[in-house]
Image (cartoon, rainbow, N blue to C red; front, side, top):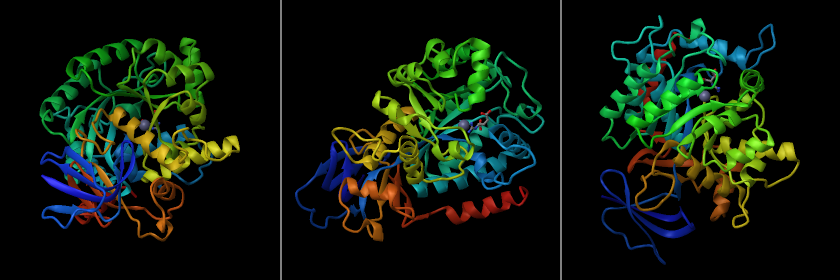
Length: 460
Ligand code: NGQ
Ligand code: ZN
């Protein structure tokens, strides 16, 4: 049992001072109390060195892509867009071995923890060898990623991805996609094996994903979802949707419907589902999506980097829609930067200020932070994102000694952290009841970085 004392902490009904949180040996919160005064120095009470807020879920990650961040910012001869970036990404992943996968994932997960993400949704689609052959253990690549998460302490919702086609109407997969391809029974072997192996590991949750409507047929979508539901009745299911306008046009040509519209009508979706991106929405589907219970996974820095377009967050939020954040391609790994972009893009489009707010809470930073926490926990199928009994002890200690934090109290702490901090405001991180980052240092970071440097020697 650990007892943590926070001078100030963000509880479900707002900020409270002198908060004592009790955490059991498995990392669950078993007690939360706030007091009028700080308790006298007790034995076994740890004192947080700043304001305590829940750790943030990162709902959308392709861990391996961190290793190519910075390598795709050079103009080529032709017009560069999402699809040309994807070609570079496909070339990059050709050489990726299982060892590389673990090494890169461990590095990116350390960076996530230091940035304030305490859980990650890994949307995992590199299943086979570079020749496109399954490994002897079909789940090998998944296990490498999960091992990396276990080493760093980040909680992982691992989602093996079903991928079969290169475009709408079951077009055969392209050559560089051969490492991704499985039938429904084949992908279920992976899900089944992992679900059994990690059933009793609270740090690991199993989910399932369809890559996109481009990559699975309607039959596969139905069969895949049914089969996943048999193994994992309540598990998260994710899918990429409507990220590119070209994808929307092709979907209309194929089905007469837009991707989100099609999924809401035919996907048998519920509040266990997350749609990633949903950049291109029109009014009726925006309303339907907002009331569906589905969480939208927004990845603002990746979406900007890839030139996707702007998700209409303001009307979606006003219609009651649920959202979460992800760092996706990991061009940036920063909770504050993702949240700041969400708001700033809306300000630029609408030419207004303070867009994402609530009648009960006018603080943009606090509303963004709390909505991304609750949407994120729902999206990853984890009891997390709240300092409340029964939830994971995932906490961030924010550094109130930063100059920008001077004199900031309560919601101003989050407004400042998100909009005004020029350095990472996260000082300490607890994930599942264990301190994984102390004073901006992860205890395994030197070892993990040395291994990552070794891995990167071949990707020049
Ligand atoms: C992915 N990433 O699966 O890694 C995708 C690109 C695709 C993003 N959409 C590939 N950000 O969508 O086909
Ligand atoms: Zn993605």
